[in-house]
Image 1 (tube, rainbow, N blue to C red):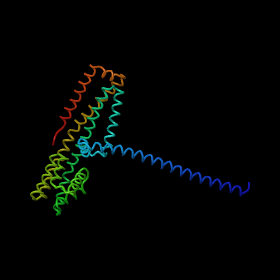
Image 2: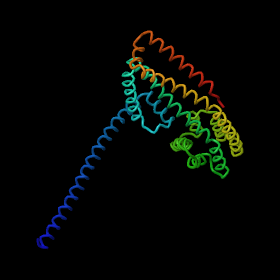
Image 3: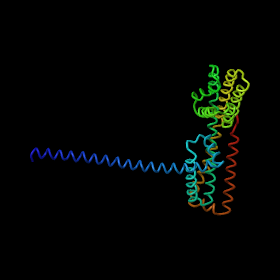
Image 4: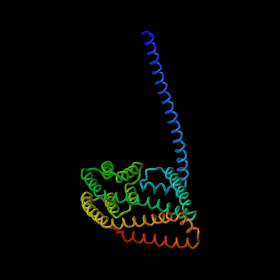
Length: 307
């Protein structure tokens, strides 16, 4: 075979290789484009469903209250996505519980899921409120420093909104947005107190409102209030540490009760369904469950101390 033939074969092979790589790359790009287009269509469809759901729910007073409830709980989802996801979760709970214990257990599990989701949102609201209260000393100190530097109270709130962290930042930004559209400062602060109900917040807002309406030495008042808020924060931390064991006991007992149900049904397959399909078994199950829930309620109440 001559050198010319070898060179031609080599060039042809290289050409086929380059063409093959180009075709493979273009095919890969086409597939990625089709995948992205399909993903965009699925995303668009999901957005349309959740958007329609949100618009429908917000058309009712209950939907608007739910939207406010989710905002206070700082849920990182829009109302439509939350409702669609909650509905899917409830359907899943209904199906799984029905396969384990029949329709009676499905109803019980559905009610428990609804109560649990509401309790979870309330716990998020409470944690956010407690975090807001814990940041009040820093907020009072920032307002005192800004006011002492010669800034008006509205400007001081704007500075505090930039210098603080969540959740104080978002709440102050909401107050500033209300002020920007013409709301009165005392009314905006009053709405802040409604969103974050506590004695500490009420005292701080009362100091600010009195300064707005009557004037006075607000810097001295804020510095004194800062010391008092720091003392109360340390006291709350000590009480929380002392009650941590009680809260852990409540969680452990609740988890143990659910685990025992699963364990009993595992040892005797279909046993839970047989109990719930028997009228006497349903009565015994309801009585035992009621006593168990009431005991958890009493223990949690005994372990709750308002500071």
